[in-house]
Length: 496
Length: 50
Image (cartoon, rainbow over all chains, first blue to last red; front, side):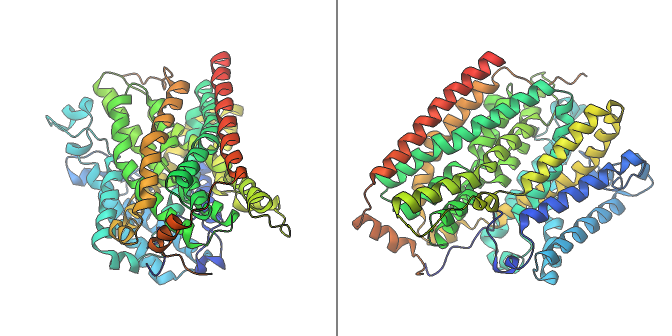
C-alpha cells in the first residue's frame, strides 16, 4: 500500500482536509446550517411560516399522492414544486457552506445534486406502501401484506445505493468526493434534531432526565471500560505497537473516527494511522448499521429505550449511531404496533443521540489525558507541555448547536406553555430537513465504504481486533448496561 | 515522516514487539477499575433515585 486507503471523510472537528484547512471546519458549518433551519422554523412563533413549503413524503400506493408541502399554509403548492423548492434550499445552504470551507463550488454543486437526487429517490421508494406500511395501516392502502419497515426504510435503501456506488463505481464517487460529506450532513441533522428532542422531552421530563443519566454511564463505559480492554487486546494478543494500538482502541471503543484522529494526534502517531483506523471504523459502522437495528427490532421491540441506548453505545461514528437509532426507532415501532403496543415515536432515536452526544463531549478531555500520559510518562518528552486549550480544540463543536436547540425549545415550552403547539409544528417543519440530511448521510456513508480497497490494503489484522472486541464484548456490555438502566422504562403510549 | 505500509508494519511489529510498559499496565488497570467502580455507583444511584 503506497498510500492511505481511500479515506472515508468522517472528519472530526479538528481534522481538516487541505482545502478545508483554510476555511471553516465542518463542525462549525454544521452548527450554522442546523441553527439556520431551526431559526427559520421558529418564524411560526411570529406568524411567519418560513419553511412550510418543505416537501413531506407520505407512505404511498399512488406515486402522485406521495409528495406534499409539510404545512397546510402551502396546500396550493404541488408536491413536485415543494420538492424542487426543498432541493433549491438544501443546495443553496450547502453551496454557501462549500464556499465557507473553500472547496470547489462547481464540483460541489454537481455532487450535492447527485447525492440529493439518489438519496431522495431512495426515501421516496422506501415510502412505498408495500415496503413501509405497518400492519395497522395496510387496510388504508388496500394491501394484504407489507415489509412493515416504515418509511424510514428509505435510510436502508440509501445506504445500499451508496454501497453500490462506493464498491462498483469508485471512479464516479471519486469525482463527487468533495460533496460526499457524511459528517457534515449528520452533524447538521443532529443540531436540528436537538429542537425536536427538546419538544419531545418537554412532555416527559422524568424520562428525559433518565436519558441524561444514561449519557453519563455511556461516558464511563466507552472511556473507562471499553478503551482499556481494546488497548490491552491490541497490544498483548495482536502485538500492535503503541502508535497503532491507541488510535485503534479509541476508534473501536469511543466515537470511531473523531476519537481515533484525536488520539492519533494526542500521542503524535503518524497521520496515516488514524486514517486507516477510521476507514475500518466506517466499514464496521455500516455492518453494524445493517445488523443491530434489526436485532433490536427482533429482541427489543417491547423495550424501545433499551434499543436506543444500545445503538448509541455499540455503533461507532456519529453518523452511523444516530442513523441506526433512527432505523431502530422505526423498526421497533412497527413491530411494537404489530404486537398491539403503540409508543410515541422518536424516543429510541432520542436515547441513541443523547448517548452518542455524551460520549463525544469527552473526546477532547480523553485526548488531553492521553497526550499527557504519552508525553510525560511513556515517551518522556520533557520539553513539551500539554495545554488545556487542546481540550477545546478537540471538542466537537456541533454539540453546542445540538444543546442550544434542545435547551431553547425546552426553555420556551416550559416558560410559555401556550407556545408548545406552535413550537411542535415548527419542529415538525425543521424535522423535514433533518430527515433529508439523515438520508443523505446514509448514502454518503455507503458511498465512502470501499470494502475491496481496504482489503487490498491489508487491513485484515486491524479488522480482527475490531471483530473480536466489538462482537466479543462491546456489543454485549453495551446491551447489558442499556438493559440495566432502561429495562421497564417505556416511552409514552399513543392513543388510538 | 515515512508513510506506513500496513503489511510491512504488521510484519515488523511481530518481530519487534514493544512490550507493555508498567505505565501502560497502570493506565489499563486503573482506568478499567475506575470504570467498573463508577458503573456500580451509577447503577446503584439509578436504583436509589429512580
